[in-house]
Amino acid sequence: MPSLAFLDGLQDWFAWPWLLLALPLPLLARWLLPASRTTGAALKVPYGARLDAIAQVGGHALRGGGMSPLIALAWILLCIAAARPQQFGEAVQPPQVGRDLMLALDLSGSMSEPDMELGGRPVDRLTAAKAVLADFLDRRAGDRVGLLVFGRRAYALTPLTLDRDSVREQLDDSVVGLAGQETAIGDAIGLAVKRLRTQPAEQRVLIMLTDGVNTAGVLDPRKAAELARGEHVRVHAIAFGGEGSLSVFGFKLPLPGAGDEIDEATLRMVAKQTGGRFFRARDTAELAGIYAEIDRLEPIRRPGKAVRPKLERYAWPLSAALACALLAFAWPRRRA
Image (tube, rainbow, N blue to C red; front, top):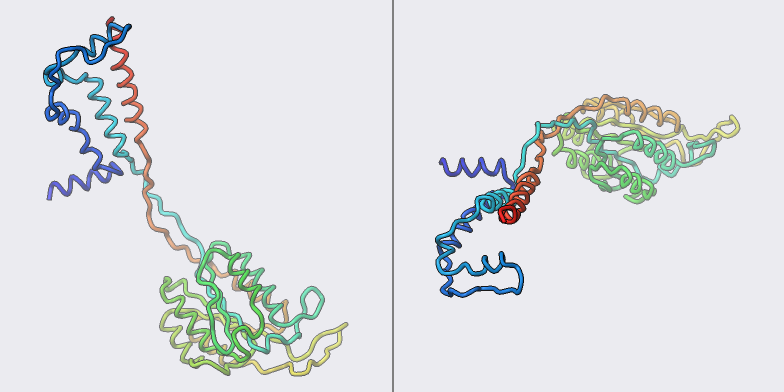
């Protein structure tokens, strides 16, 4: 309909086009308000003959006289300024660089094995993994990162977010056994798929670190890999753990209870089936190298939504209205 198209056109130029309805208010007031019946002066002052002459306007002067052209123009400009005229700038389509990464960290009991070194001192696997992950987060500016942990069950600690400081805080607060003592690799993959399925297909990436074998959970890793492949989630699997010994002054000392088997075959299968990569890290240096290699993945450039910035132009008619009003009040004095 033409009327609707006209309104849509006004909305393109004014933020509040309905305020333009105030334009005929002076005319309505002129014809609808009752005229004054008194013939005497409405206002008397002991000085100012000009004010006295204006005050003596009565009777039907409101109907017979006309509004000053400058005042009328000032009113029109004031209504236009109140409607907030806007000008659309050139369309801008900012690029968004980065990936949507889910980090899955194993918190099972075996992550407490002190078979790693960090800064020349022995540390447990979780401490070493935290240090490497924190450094990895520092380099992922522009990515949306989420963190989930898994043990007997899988839990999401942070959703996908650009706030890497929040992810780092949750990572620092994670402790062994927080999610149970066992290892639910399949459930961790399934939870990551659930969190990533709403993201663009090329952005769905899971980086999972574990040091054990799937011993818990309701979802088998093979079924989880099929689910991830169906949802286009690439899984980079990192098998992390020493050989059951710790290097002290160049000597390899066995650690009691260490050296638990890691199911490399299953992790390799998950990575291959989902289009990801499998990595094996036996010490902190190797783990840092793996995350550095993942960090070198080319970021995918996603075009952002095109935006046309609105430039406010109400100052122009407002300034013109003020100028017209000043001229209207100054004009009689110039004629005197």
